[in-house]
Image (tube, rainbow, N blue to C red; front, side):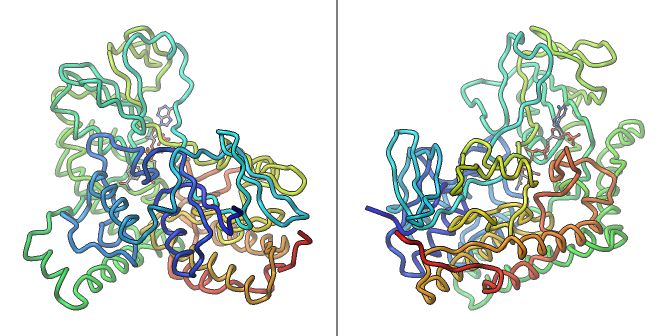
Length: 489
Ligand code: NAP
């Protein structure tokens, strides 16, 4: 049967699209999921200590509130359980086809529909296609000389080997980003020795985590508007930080003081403190929160190594100063390849050109992170420049879903079968985006982050305005920005 919509991926954004389609009364849709379980990044990342750094009452769907979050910042297991429960409760689960990996998709211009080819060889046709494949999907393992000669265990945080007991081992953790700061405190007690390879120190603010007791949870469940009040409060606490990221880094002074205060309280050794102090503006790289990172890395069985890695031998990591650090386990906490979206999944337009190839030439650009000129009836979730540095990504995802649904509504109203963003509109939007980006801390803060395209230095991932501005712009599709036509077929 031909589908009206096919969604690729059953992570947070795929589920949000499915719920949106359900609310629109669209029944002919499928969510294709390559794995045998939903949850996306929350399924793949199950390393010890994995949790969300945005409070759960904010990092959850507005249409699926959960008064029962056990604490302010829920763990990965609790978030995954929430996503699974929500998919069931909202009738989304039957729409997901598991173990259905999409190999490629082709736009058939005459017929005005997508031909989606699965790895199994099966073909599905659909009027519209939504890629909800996520940004943090392909783990990045740096090419280090000699890695293939290493005789011990090697894995990435996003592919944690729970079958590999770390007790009594000599472990290297490479990287000091958002994943590392959660992993290290969770494993430090178990390992014999931990070598932490830090290339750049992160800014870290205290994590004001706390469990919600039974009384609070009851209040969240039964007291009218209490949960909504908490969610709004958390939203605005985060949203008010936007100014510092976007236009006025001086307003970050308060956060910098908070970070410096934590470092001073938790690290007494001045030399070590200096090595842990970033030399770039707060917010330039993702601002991290942790109250147990510094206590963990100042444990006697931890050594901070900040000279670069030269090579890896069969039983050691050798740094540029010539020193060999004997290890039997290497854990890469080195992040994800976020600059090559859809490199593994060719989405081909009418000329047979893949979106990845198109972006290689034009740079990763889209309209409001959602539609791309030259790729009709195709929508992206969390596409270029729709990521957030200061608030909940789920807020952006829900705004994006609303935008897609408004496009569908307009297509119906106009009896159109094909919608495509006009390239002039997309170009004008991107000019504005780049102008605004120029003033943000991500461009001016003096760091090299994974938000920036290494070839051009352009920030291809983050939204350079407030979340509210994104919500406002995505509430309704601007008809002048799109062409709505009828396909022949
Ligand atoms: P990340 O923040 O990109 O950190 C990667 C770390 O590895 C950085 O310290 C980086 O150093 C280092 N690194 C990369 N390549 C290296 C190399 N060749 N040699 C030495 N060090 C190298 O990755 P992540 O920690 O996996 O986090 C990625 C993103 O996932 C986060 O920014 C966040 O958006 C998300 N995340 C969220 C949560 C959450 O709580 N919600 C938790 C985990 C992750 P440099 O800084 O020098 O590049």
